[in-house]
Length: 128
Image 1 (spheres, rainbow, N blue to C red):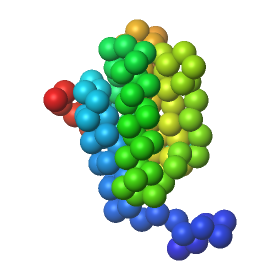
Image 2 (image 1 turned 30 degrees about the vertical axis):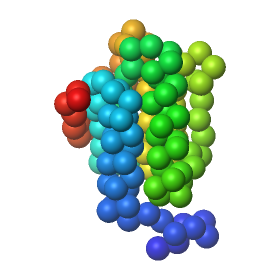
Image 3 (image 1 turned 45 degrees about the horizontal axis):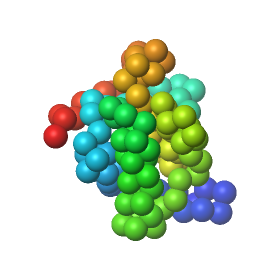
Image 4 (image 1 turned 90 degrees about the vertical axis):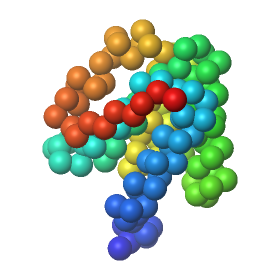
C-alpha cells in the first residue's frame, strides 16, 4: 500500500523497527524501557512510543546516537526528526510510526508520558 507516494510499512516492519530500537537502547544500558502501543487510541500522535532513561547526559546522548546509527546501518532508516540533543535531558527521536523518548530520570518523572497515555497497551522490558 502506498501513502503519499510512499510504501506504507507493514505491522511486521514496525515490530522489527521497534525491536531494533529496543536492542539499540539495551546496547548502551538504557534503563526502564517501556513500549506503549497507541494504535487503538483516538488522536494518538503515532503508533508507538518507546520510552527509556539514562543515568547521565552522556549516556542519554549515546543511547539516541546508537539508535540512529543502528537503524541507519541495519534498516537504512534515518529519523524524521530529532530534538533535545543540546541539553540532553529529554531527547526525542521520531521515526513516524514510532517515537523514541530518551529521558533523564527526573525529567521522565516530571512529564509522566506513561501516565498521559495510560490507556495504551504497555510492554515493560527488563534492565540488562
